[in-house]
Image (cartoon, rainbow, N blue to C red; front, side, top):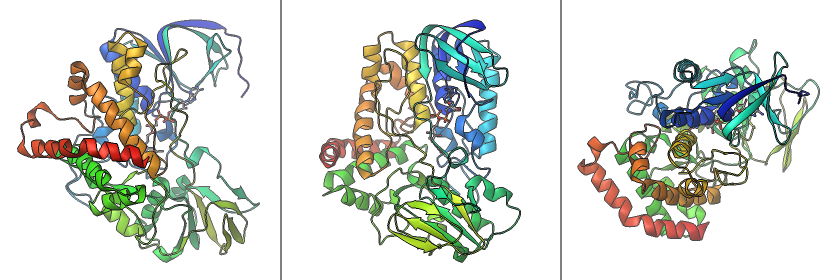
Length: 465
Ligand SMILES: Cc1cc2nc3c(=O)[nH]c(=O)nc-3n(C[C@H](O)[C@H](O)[C@H](O)COP(=O)(O)OP(=O)(O)OC[C@H]3O[C@@H](n4cnc5c(N)ncnc54)[C@H](O)[C@@H]3O)c2cc1C
């Protein structure tokens, strides 16, 4: 779309936040809660929630709802599932609940209080000096006069199958669809060829199996083997969280290599892999239920010949070979990159703030933390000291690096009494210890176990990286 650089009107604001996805929403929410400022929130989508607006209908958070959203308002009820294969684990919101949640936050917390102006369906662009926002509907361009800061809440925006073309060539008349279309098929294909090895691929397969497709009618093209986190060890409970950290550091302290580290974590019940005969090379580590793992293992027709290069009506060409494509098959694109890995840059740069992860994972908590620190500190050097950027993991080395950087960052910001108090009251924080649990013997025991091994574990992780 050609964007007009001639502004027909001007608006003043304290903060211009670009991107109303989870990170832009979490940053804004924490900022306006702790500073008397006005924010203009811009998104090219017409509503908030970012990629959730284009997600497949059967997607759910892979983690507890409590860990997702904004700091001021819990997503869901914080209830533990009472029935089904995840009985005993925290509830996980579906797409519709996530969308309603963000709609409610935008209207009730942001717009109705007069603290935030939302410019939806609008593209942010700049001609160098000016900050311009062009409506994708009216075409009108607004010049934003920003009194304090511009916040780029698009820096980690993930790519998803619905909005990215498949990363392989698709011949004429080849039936290739994004997994979103599985829920709207008019006719059952003879075979489903699932391309991808991340969370969307596992979701597609579990959904197909749940809808009566026998595993023999699924072909799974897995370019890499993934490590995934056992969902039962990522729960909003301090004994579980401290136990996970202690298991991680214990495994690291004794590990001979990165592969050995992950095998030790598997033995400790932390990591899961689909095929125990193959050592995974991918470690984006979404969480997976053990019931999901059991289902995934029923699919035996697995193609491990690298990445797909192209698909015709009769065959699939991969890095290391060619396999036939049966007549009547449907190829399902689950191969968007998902997580993004832009260079780690200081969150507070001279031109803008770029929220990134700080602790280990949990983008919503990290964006909220950045909003809190922006509101409560007045020196960028200090803000950057408290909130160094962390990496998101793609492979085992990145994962180990993320543990090192995140543990050190949490020590730094956790040493500030006000941040520690805020973080302990914030449900998004997976490491939070509610004051009422501080003297719980189980929490104390888990904390002592972690304290006994953390330095050794960190030292070894740094060597392994
Ligand atoms: C399927 C899936 C499931 C996930 N599940 C979980 C989970 O359970 N727990 C968890 O913690 N994380 C989860 N994540 C990861 C997490 O959702 C994301 O990493 C993060 O929350 C994404 O939010 P975001 O705001 O960075 O990006 P986005 O959601 O992509 O939002 C960025 C927004 O910026 C807008 N934008 C970009 N450029 C411009 C521009 N120039 N002008 C105007 N607007 C612009 C886009 O339209 C978009 O709406 C999941 C991710 C996926 C894909």
